Image 1 (cartoon, rainbow over the protein chains, first blue to last red):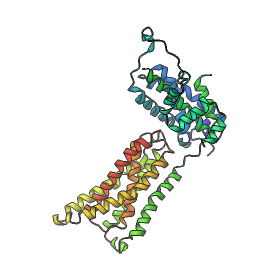
Image 2 (image 1 turned 135 degrees about the horizontal axis):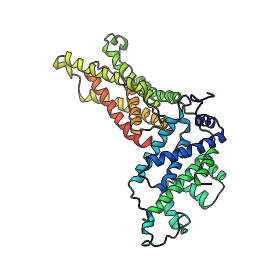
Image 3 (image 1 turned 90 degrees about the vertical axis):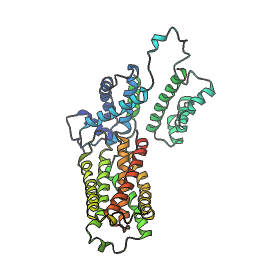
Image 4 (image 1 turned 30 degrees about the vertical axis):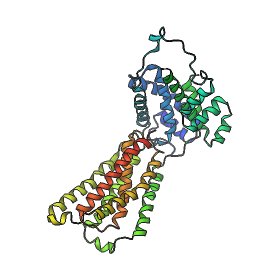
Length: 188
Length: 212
Protein backbone atom coordinates (compact mmCIF):
# COMPACT_ATOMS: atom_id res chain seq x y z
CA UNK A 1 0.00 0.00 0.00
CA UNK A 2 1.47 3.37 -0.93
CA UNK A 3 -1.11 5.92 0.24
CA UNK A 4 -3.37 5.88 3.28
CA UNK A 5 -7.14 5.86 3.07
CA UNK A 6 -7.23 9.50 4.14
CA UNK A 7 -4.45 11.39 2.32
CA UNK A 8 -5.77 14.65 3.81
CA UNK A 9 -4.44 13.74 7.22
CA UNK A 10 -0.71 14.56 7.36
CA UNK A 11 -0.34 12.36 10.44
CA UNK A 12 -1.60 9.36 8.49
CA UNK A 13 0.88 10.06 5.71
CA UNK A 14 3.74 10.35 8.23
CA UNK A 15 2.89 7.18 10.14
CA UNK A 16 2.53 5.24 6.91
CA UNK A 17 6.03 6.34 5.90
CA UNK A 18 7.31 5.66 9.40
CA UNK A 19 6.01 2.10 9.46
CA UNK A 20 7.72 1.60 6.12
CA UNK A 21 11.05 2.57 7.69
CA UNK A 22 11.30 6.39 7.41
CA UNK A 23 12.70 7.43 10.80
CA UNK A 24 12.51 11.17 10.05
CA UNK A 25 8.84 10.95 9.15
CA UNK A 26 8.36 9.03 12.38
CA UNK A 27 10.07 11.73 14.46
CA UNK A 28 7.87 14.38 12.78
CA UNK A 29 4.80 12.22 13.46
CA UNK A 30 5.61 11.86 17.17
CA UNK A 31 6.43 15.59 17.46
CA UNK A 32 3.08 16.44 15.90
CA UNK A 33 1.19 13.94 18.05
CA UNK A 34 2.68 15.06 21.38
CA UNK A 35 0.71 18.36 21.61
CA UNK A 36 -2.48 16.53 20.62
CA UNK A 37 -1.85 14.08 23.45
CA UNK A 38 -1.18 16.93 25.90
CA UNK A 39 -4.62 18.30 25.05
CA UNK A 40 -6.26 14.92 25.56
CA UNK A 41 -4.51 14.33 28.88
CA UNK A 42 -5.50 17.81 30.10
CA UNK A 43 -9.12 17.28 29.07
CA UNK A 44 -9.59 13.70 30.23
CA UNK A 45 -7.20 13.51 33.14
CA UNK A 46 -8.68 16.25 35.32
CA UNK A 47 -8.42 14.02 38.36
CA UNK A 48 -4.71 13.50 37.74
CA UNK A 49 -2.17 15.88 39.25
CA UNK A 50 -0.98 18.34 36.56
CA UNK A 51 2.68 17.66 37.33
CA UNK A 52 2.17 14.09 36.11
CA UNK A 53 0.50 15.04 32.83
CA UNK A 54 3.76 15.02 30.87
CA UNK A 55 4.59 11.55 32.27
CA UNK A 56 1.29 10.28 30.93
CA UNK A 57 1.93 11.93 27.55
CA UNK A 58 5.19 9.96 27.47
CA UNK A 59 3.42 6.74 28.43
CA UNK A 60 0.98 7.26 25.54
CA UNK A 61 3.87 7.97 23.15
CA UNK A 62 5.51 4.72 24.25
CA UNK A 63 2.25 2.83 23.75
CA UNK A 64 1.85 4.32 20.27
CA UNK A 65 5.45 3.33 19.57
CA UNK A 66 5.03 -0.27 20.71
CA UNK A 67 1.69 -0.72 18.90
CA UNK A 68 2.28 1.43 15.82
CA UNK A 69 1.98 -1.56 13.50
CA UNK A 70 -1.63 -2.14 14.58
CA UNK A 71 -2.85 0.92 12.69
CA UNK A 72 -4.51 -0.24 9.48
CA UNK A 73 -3.63 2.26 6.70
CA UNK A 74 -6.98 1.41 5.10
CA UNK A 75 -8.82 3.03 8.02
CA UNK A 76 -8.59 6.59 9.38
CA UNK A 77 -5.77 7.32 11.82
CA UNK A 78 -7.52 9.49 14.40
CA UNK A 79 -9.88 6.88 15.93
CA UNK A 80 -6.87 4.59 16.37
CA UNK A 81 -4.79 7.34 17.94
CA UNK A 82 -7.53 8.53 20.28
CA UNK A 83 -8.37 4.96 21.32
CA UNK A 84 -4.77 4.38 22.43
CA UNK A 85 -4.70 7.73 24.25
CA UNK A 86 -7.96 6.94 26.04
CA UNK A 87 -6.76 3.47 27.02
CA UNK A 88 -3.54 4.82 28.47
CA UNK A 89 -5.22 7.72 30.30
CA UNK A 90 -7.65 5.30 31.92
CA UNK A 91 -4.72 3.01 32.72
CA UNK A 92 -2.85 5.93 34.29
CA UNK A 93 -5.88 6.98 36.34
CA UNK A 94 -6.35 3.43 37.58
CA UNK A 95 -2.74 3.07 38.60
CA UNK A 96 -2.38 6.49 40.19
CA UNK A 97 -5.95 6.92 41.33
CA UNK A 98 -5.60 4.98 44.53
CA UNK A 99 -2.71 7.10 45.73
CA UNK A 100 -3.85 10.34 47.35
CA UNK A 101 -1.91 13.20 45.88
CA UNK A 102 -1.20 16.24 48.05
CA UNK A 103 0.79 19.22 46.84
CA UNK A 104 4.10 19.15 48.67
CA UNK A 105 4.32 22.95 49.05
CA UNK A 106 1.70 22.92 51.81
CA UNK A 107 3.99 20.87 53.99
CA UNK A 108 7.34 22.40 53.18
CA UNK A 109 7.72 23.93 56.64
CA UNK A 110 6.85 20.72 58.49
CA UNK A 111 8.85 18.26 56.40
CA UNK A 112 12.59 17.88 56.74
CA UNK A 113 14.63 18.69 53.64
CA UNK A 114 14.98 15.87 51.15
CA UNK A 115 18.39 14.41 50.57
CA UNK A 116 18.02 14.31 46.79
CA UNK A 117 15.58 13.65 44.04
CA UNK A 118 17.25 11.13 41.71
CA UNK A 119 16.28 7.66 42.96
CA UNK A 120 19.73 6.19 42.30
CA UNK A 121 21.94 9.23 42.95
CA UNK A 122 20.39 9.76 46.35
CA UNK A 123 21.12 6.23 47.37
CA UNK A 124 24.75 5.61 46.71
CA UNK A 125 24.72 2.98 49.36
CA UNK A 126 25.09 -0.31 47.45
CA UNK A 127 22.66 -2.29 49.53
CA UNK A 128 19.99 0.34 49.09
CA UNK A 129 20.46 0.29 45.31
CA UNK A 130 20.30 -3.50 45.29
CA UNK A 131 17.10 -3.40 47.29
CA UNK A 132 15.50 -0.89 44.91
CA UNK A 133 16.61 -2.84 41.85
CA UNK A 134 15.36 -6.04 43.47
CA UNK A 135 11.83 -4.69 43.12
CA UNK A 136 12.24 -4.70 39.34
CA UNK A 137 12.15 -7.82 37.19
CA UNK A 138 15.69 -9.23 36.79
CA UNK A 139 16.02 -8.19 33.15
CA UNK A 140 15.09 -4.55 33.76
CA UNK A 141 17.37 -4.50 36.80
CA UNK A 142 20.28 -5.70 34.68
CA UNK A 143 19.54 -3.04 32.05
CA UNK A 144 19.63 -0.33 34.74
CA UNK A 145 22.85 -1.69 36.25
CA UNK A 146 24.56 -1.87 32.87
CA UNK A 147 23.42 1.44 31.37
CA UNK A 148 22.82 3.74 34.33
CA UNK A 149 25.29 2.46 36.96
CA UNK A 150 28.19 0.93 34.97
CA UNK A 151 27.60 3.22 31.96
CA UNK A 152 28.37 0.48 29.45
CA UNK A 153 27.89 1.16 25.75
CA UNK A 154 24.26 0.52 24.74
CA UNK A 155 25.44 -1.54 21.76
CA UNK A 156 27.34 -4.00 23.98
CA UNK A 157 24.45 -4.27 26.42
CA UNK A 158 21.92 -4.93 23.71
CA UNK A 159 24.14 -7.64 22.23
CA UNK A 160 24.81 -9.24 25.61
CA UNK A 161 21.15 -9.30 26.67
CA UNK A 162 19.93 -10.17 23.17
CA UNK A 163 17.57 -7.18 23.16
CA UNK A 164 16.99 -4.83 20.25
CA UNK A 165 18.35 -1.30 20.84
CA UNK A 166 14.80 0.01 20.83
CA UNK A 167 13.59 -2.53 23.33
CA UNK A 168 16.59 -1.67 25.51
CA UNK A 169 15.76 2.05 25.51
CA UNK A 170 12.11 1.43 26.29
CA UNK A 171 13.05 -0.98 29.09
CA UNK A 172 15.45 1.54 30.62
CA UNK A 173 12.94 4.35 30.38
CA UNK A 174 10.24 2.29 32.10
CA UNK A 175 12.58 0.93 34.73
CA UNK A 176 13.80 4.42 35.69
CA UNK A 177 10.23 5.62 36.01
CA UNK A 178 9.29 2.70 38.22
CA UNK A 179 12.37 3.28 40.36
CA UNK A 180 11.34 6.90 40.77
CA UNK A 181 7.92 5.83 42.04
CA UNK A 182 9.49 3.26 44.41
CA UNK A 183 11.65 6.06 45.77
CA UNK A 184 8.62 8.27 46.37
CA UNK A 185 6.72 5.46 48.05
CA UNK A 186 9.61 4.80 50.40
CA UNK A 187 9.69 8.39 51.53
CA UNK A 188 5.97 8.79 52.05
CA UNK B 1 15.33 19.73 24.91
CA UNK B 2 12.63 18.37 27.18
CA UNK B 3 12.49 14.74 28.25
CA UNK B 4 9.58 14.19 25.87
CA UNK B 5 11.68 15.44 22.96
CA UNK B 6 14.48 13.11 24.03
CA UNK B 7 12.06 10.21 24.22
CA UNK B 8 10.75 11.01 20.74
CA UNK B 9 14.29 11.19 19.35
CA UNK B 10 15.12 7.82 20.88
CA UNK B 11 11.91 6.17 19.68
CA UNK B 12 12.42 7.47 16.15
CA UNK B 13 15.75 5.64 15.91
CA UNK B 14 14.03 2.28 16.24
CA UNK B 15 13.68 0.14 13.14
CA UNK B 16 10.09 -0.21 11.93
CA UNK B 17 8.14 -3.10 13.47
CA UNK B 18 7.11 -6.14 11.48
CA UNK B 19 3.68 -5.61 9.95
CA UNK B 20 0.64 -6.66 11.96
CA UNK B 21 -1.03 -9.38 9.92
CA UNK B 22 -4.47 -10.62 11.01
CA UNK B 23 -4.26 -13.16 8.21
CA UNK B 24 -1.11 -14.71 9.61
CA UNK B 25 -2.60 -14.81 13.11
CA UNK B 26 -5.80 -16.40 11.75
CA UNK B 27 -3.82 -19.08 9.90
CA UNK B 28 -1.72 -19.93 12.95
CA UNK B 29 -4.81 -19.89 15.17
CA UNK B 30 -6.61 -22.34 12.91
CA UNK B 31 -3.54 -24.59 12.87
CA UNK B 32 -3.38 -24.53 16.68
CA UNK B 33 -7.02 -25.66 16.76
CA UNK B 34 -6.76 -28.23 13.97
CA UNK B 35 -3.59 -30.04 15.05
CA UNK B 36 -4.77 -31.23 18.51
CA UNK B 37 -8.22 -32.05 17.09
CA UNK B 38 -6.70 -34.03 14.21
CA UNK B 39 -4.42 -35.90 16.60
CA UNK B 40 -7.43 -36.75 18.76
CA UNK B 41 -9.44 -37.99 15.75
CA UNK B 42 -6.49 -40.06 14.54
CA UNK B 43 -6.12 -41.68 17.94
CA UNK B 44 -9.80 -42.11 18.83
CA UNK B 45 -11.21 -42.47 15.32
CA UNK B 46 -14.23 -40.77 13.79
CA UNK B 47 -17.64 -42.10 14.67
CA UNK B 48 -18.67 -45.13 12.60
CA UNK B 49 -20.72 -44.31 9.50
CA UNK B 50 -20.30 -40.55 9.89
CA UNK B 51 -21.78 -39.73 6.51
CA UNK B 52 -24.85 -41.93 6.86
CA UNK B 53 -25.47 -40.37 10.27
CA UNK B 54 -25.63 -36.99 8.54
CA UNK B 55 -28.87 -38.09 6.84
CA UNK B 56 -30.50 -36.91 10.07
CA UNK B 57 -30.30 -33.12 9.52
CA UNK B 58 -29.73 -32.47 13.22
CA UNK B 59 -26.42 -34.31 13.23
CA UNK B 60 -24.45 -32.06 10.82
CA UNK B 61 -25.66 -29.10 12.93
CA UNK B 62 -23.60 -30.55 15.77
CA UNK B 63 -20.53 -29.79 13.64
CA UNK B 64 -21.77 -26.72 11.76
CA UNK B 65 -22.86 -24.64 14.78
CA UNK B 66 -19.54 -24.80 16.65
CA UNK B 67 -17.67 -24.24 13.37
CA UNK B 68 -19.71 -21.07 12.74
CA UNK B 69 -19.06 -19.86 16.30
CA UNK B 70 -15.34 -20.58 15.93
CA UNK B 71 -14.94 -18.66 12.65
CA UNK B 72 -17.10 -15.69 13.67
CA UNK B 73 -15.47 -15.29 17.05
CA UNK B 74 -11.99 -15.49 15.49
CA UNK B 75 -12.94 -12.76 12.98
CA UNK B 76 -14.32 -10.61 15.80
CA UNK B 77 -11.28 -10.93 18.03
CA UNK B 78 -8.99 -10.06 15.12
CA UNK B 79 -10.96 -6.89 14.45
CA UNK B 80 -10.83 -5.98 18.13
CA UNK B 81 -7.04 -6.38 18.09
CA UNK B 82 -6.74 -2.90 16.53
CA UNK B 83 -7.41 0.12 18.76
CA UNK B 84 -10.47 2.11 17.77
CA UNK B 85 -12.01 -0.67 15.65
CA UNK B 86 -15.64 -1.74 16.04
CA UNK B 87 -16.62 -5.42 16.41
CA UNK B 88 -18.16 -5.35 12.92
CA UNK B 89 -20.68 -7.67 11.31
CA UNK B 90 -18.97 -10.87 12.47
CA UNK B 91 -19.53 -9.82 16.08
CA UNK B 92 -23.28 -9.47 15.55
CA UNK B 93 -23.48 -12.61 13.38
CA UNK B 94 -22.03 -14.49 16.34
CA UNK B 95 -25.49 -14.27 17.89
CA UNK B 96 -27.06 -16.40 15.12
CA UNK B 97 -25.43 -19.79 15.92
CA UNK B 98 -26.06 -19.11 19.61
CA UNK B 99 -29.72 -18.38 18.87
CA UNK B 100 -29.95 -21.43 16.58
CA UNK B 101 -28.54 -23.66 19.33
CA UNK B 102 -31.09 -22.28 21.81
CA UNK B 103 -33.96 -22.93 19.39
CA UNK B 104 -32.62 -26.44 18.76
CA UNK B 105 -32.49 -27.17 22.48
CA UNK B 106 -36.01 -25.83 23.15
CA UNK B 107 -37.43 -27.64 20.10
CA UNK B 108 -35.91 -30.96 21.14
CA UNK B 109 -37.14 -30.47 24.68
CA UNK B 110 -40.69 -29.87 23.43
CA UNK B 111 -40.74 -32.73 20.91
CA UNK B 112 -39.05 -35.55 22.82
CA UNK B 113 -41.03 -37.65 25.29
CA UNK B 114 -39.89 -36.91 28.86
CA UNK B 115 -38.17 -40.27 29.30
CA UNK B 116 -35.91 -39.71 26.27
CA UNK B 117 -34.94 -36.13 27.01
CA UNK B 118 -31.94 -36.77 29.20
CA UNK B 119 -31.62 -40.52 28.67
CA UNK B 120 -27.95 -40.34 27.60
CA UNK B 121 -26.82 -38.21 30.52
CA UNK B 122 -24.36 -40.06 32.73
CA UNK B 123 -21.09 -39.32 34.42
CA UNK B 124 -19.10 -41.17 31.74
CA UNK B 125 -20.81 -39.64 28.72
CA UNK B 126 -20.88 -36.07 30.06
CA UNK B 127 -17.36 -36.38 31.46
CA UNK B 128 -16.01 -37.63 28.13
CA UNK B 129 -17.68 -34.81 26.22
CA UNK B 130 -16.74 -31.97 28.60
CA UNK B 131 -13.27 -33.36 29.27
CA UNK B 132 -12.37 -33.89 25.63
CA UNK B 133 -13.54 -30.45 24.48
CA UNK B 134 -11.86 -28.63 27.37
CA UNK B 135 -8.59 -30.54 26.94
CA UNK B 136 -8.56 -29.93 23.18
CA UNK B 137 -9.10 -26.20 23.89
CA UNK B 138 -6.00 -25.72 26.02
CA UNK B 139 -3.37 -25.57 23.28
CA UNK B 140 -5.35 -23.26 20.98
CA UNK B 141 -6.28 -20.93 23.87
CA UNK B 142 -2.64 -20.52 24.87
CA UNK B 143 -1.47 -20.12 21.26
CA UNK B 144 -4.11 -17.57 20.26
CA UNK B 145 -3.60 -15.52 23.44
CA UNK B 146 0.11 -15.36 22.64
CA UNK B 147 -0.52 -14.42 19.02
CA UNK B 148 -2.99 -11.73 20.05
CA UNK B 149 -0.32 -9.96 22.08
CA UNK B 150 1.01 -8.70 18.74
CA UNK B 151 -2.17 -6.65 18.52
CA UNK B 152 -3.53 -4.14 21.01
CA UNK B 153 -6.81 -5.26 22.55
CA UNK B 154 -8.70 -2.35 24.08
CA UNK B 155 -10.79 -4.66 26.28
CA UNK B 156 -8.51 -7.52 27.34
CA UNK B 157 -11.16 -9.61 29.19
CA UNK B 158 -13.52 -9.40 26.20
CA UNK B 159 -10.79 -10.34 23.74
CA UNK B 160 -9.67 -13.13 26.08
CA UNK B 161 -13.24 -14.45 26.24
CA UNK B 162 -13.38 -14.50 22.44
CA UNK B 163 -10.07 -16.40 22.38
CA UNK B 164 -11.54 -19.04 24.70
CA UNK B 165 -14.72 -19.17 22.63
CA UNK B 166 -12.78 -19.60 19.38
CA UNK B 167 -10.64 -22.37 20.87
CA UNK B 168 -13.51 -24.27 22.50
CA UNK B 169 -15.81 -23.97 19.48
CA UNK B 170 -12.98 -25.20 17.24
CA UNK B 171 -12.29 -28.10 19.62
CA UNK B 172 -16.01 -28.96 19.71
CA UNK B 173 -16.11 -28.93 15.89
CA UNK B 174 -13.39 -31.58 15.79
CA UNK B 175 -14.84 -33.55 18.69
CA UNK B 176 -18.30 -33.63 17.04
CA UNK B 177 -16.93 -35.94 14.32
CA UNK B 178 -16.17 -38.51 17.05
CA UNK B 179 -19.21 -37.96 19.24
CA UNK B 180 -22.18 -40.32 18.80
CA UNK B 181 -24.66 -38.43 20.98
CA UNK B 182 -27.17 -37.02 18.50
CA UNK B 183 -29.77 -35.73 20.93
CA UNK B 184 -29.64 -31.89 20.77
CA UNK B 185 -30.51 -31.75 24.45
CA UNK B 186 -27.26 -33.59 25.07
CA UNK B 187 -24.85 -31.91 22.70
CA UNK B 188 -26.17 -28.36 22.97
CA UNK B 189 -26.06 -28.57 26.77
CA UNK B 190 -22.62 -30.10 27.19
CA UNK B 191 -20.83 -28.54 24.22
CA UNK B 192 -22.34 -25.29 25.47
CA UNK B 193 -21.12 -25.82 29.01
CA UNK B 194 -17.60 -26.66 27.80
CA UNK B 195 -17.68 -23.51 25.66
CA UNK B 196 -18.74 -21.38 28.63
CA UNK B 197 -16.02 -22.82 30.87
CA UNK B 198 -13.25 -22.15 28.35
CA UNK B 199 -14.68 -18.71 27.47
CA UNK B 200 -14.65 -17.79 31.16
CA UNK B 201 -11.09 -19.03 31.55
CA UNK B 202 -10.11 -17.06 28.43
CA UNK B 203 -11.63 -13.89 29.90
CA UNK B 204 -9.72 -14.40 33.15
CA UNK B 205 -6.38 -15.06 31.46
CA UNK B 206 -6.95 -12.48 28.74
CA UNK B 207 -7.50 -9.78 31.36
CA UNK B 208 -3.90 -10.37 32.50
CA UNK B 209 -2.08 -11.54 29.37
CA UNK B 210 -3.51 -9.09 26.85
CA UNK B 211 -2.89 -5.88 28.82
CA UNK B 212 -0.34 -3.53 27.33
